[in-house]
Image (cartoon, rainbow, N blue to C red):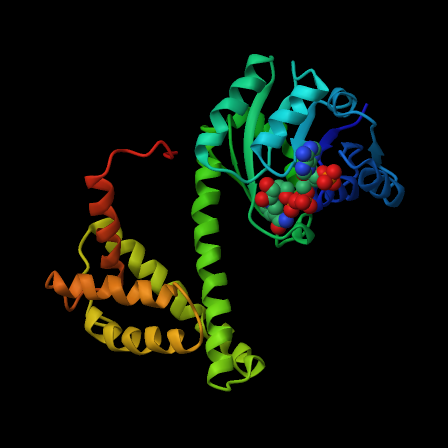
Length: 300
Ligand SMILES: NC(=O)c1ccc[n+]([C@@H]2O[C@H](COP(=O)([O-])OP(=O)(O)OC[C@H]3O[C@@H](n4cnc5c(N)ncnc54)[C@H](OP(=O)(O)O)[C@@H]3O)[C@@H](O)[C@H]2O)c1
């Protein structure tokens, strides 16, 4: 009998299996491409590869689902006929909150218990101080998961008793992450256009951290209050910068730049008579559009 099962040993599943084994847990694994699971087992004595997903699930009380997405997770569970009765099943695949219900029903309908998890870091960080994972599910199930969360190390947060909340949180975190990625790839193109060495630019990046945190903190406070009066960097200071940046982005060959989108949003806000407000006031444009549109199903 193993302590934990990992279904799917791609990069994230392999990271989960490695960290659990390093923490002294016996780990049952299954992967569609058996050689990937076999390689992992060959390198880690506590990792045991199984020829079937059903066999791996039956080997331990807790299963970590680490497949590419929800559709594939359903397919693997369908085709394997894994018996989920009495198991604590934790879903790690990325998805949207609406993906959660059907999988949860499948697991609980089969007599299992269901949690959602979202690992917010690269797989290499699992088992280190840099691991940050959020969970949704009952407090009792989260407590039962302690050997695994301990193996993950770093910061393991039980966010909510509602599993889909963890996936909603992950969507928010991913949107934030891709804003950064988008900023990086666009600024690399602009650096090339303007003959600025990317390496020279990179040296300055850590210096932005405090300003960045400040923007988020101040912005959050203003969004919560719905009052955007803020003299330090009002819209009037952003519009010139964004007019220039949107033009430069065009010269750099960037299509659909976020800089153009930001410029247009600030223009819209100024057309509405806003001037001395913090740029977080742009969120009101999204609120207004949501209020005018029918409710989406993607709520936590
Ligand atoms: N990598 C990250 O930084 C990270 C961080 C947090 C969350 N995640 C999420 O974790 C999930 C897995 O990502 P990953 O990075 O581990 O991807 P990956 O390395 O591509 O692994 C994908 C896994 O899904 C399996 N799979 C794919 N198609 C399948 C199919 N038709 N039938 C059965 N199994 C199938 C793969 O098996 P084979 O080996 O046979 O292809 C493999 O085990 C994704 O939802 C991802 O968004 C990733």
